Length: 96
Image (cartoon, rainbow, N blue to C red):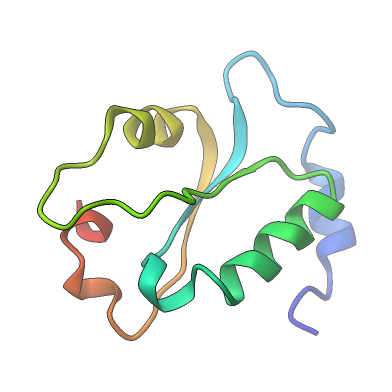
């Protein structure tokens, strides 16, 4: 499975977030492409390993700018993982 070696990776993450980081990882993805399949599996795997991940579950309106909530979550995350999908680059939010 794609999560081989997660045991090793999760041991390098603190079990609780530090004062500086609210999230261990921010997940960047195009919702229409991956929200209800791959992202759910990845988020659940992180949760099972004690990795605190931020996944935006809101369906943001096209043409709107990134919300302050998303920008804050990015700033409060230790790492970011970009999930590339077929139409990722057609999203202005993903590219911002």
